[in-house]
Image 1 (spheres, helix red, strand yellow):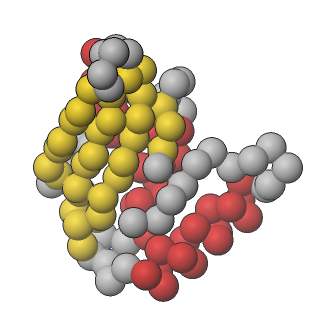
Image 2: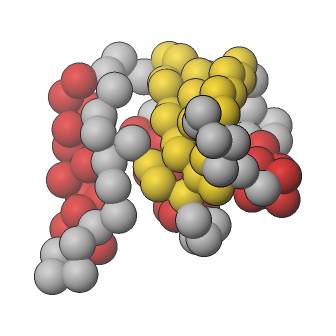
Image 3: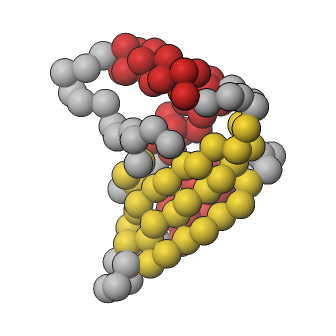
Amino acid sequence: MINISEPHENINPDDFYASLKEKLEATHNFPEDYLFKFILTNEDSRHTEIYRIFDGIKFTLNTRESKNGKYSAISISAFVLDADQVIRIYKEVGQIPGVMML
């Protein structure tokens, strides 16, 4: 698992994702199950948006609510073909407001 967060404002997103691709390819043997972890506000619509991104991909899901119920942690183990697919998923999830990617 590689820790990912939104690229910093002063880092070119293309450079960030190129570096991420290199790290993924160096540490993973694709195709394989890849673990995605997200933290988001506990709104059903946000959960649904994330689940839609994984439509057509074989995955298992684990969710956990925070003590106060305001946030959810979602872990998704998805079968991915390559680093490019992992990056596409991160980019799509990154478009959802209020989601932190780990």
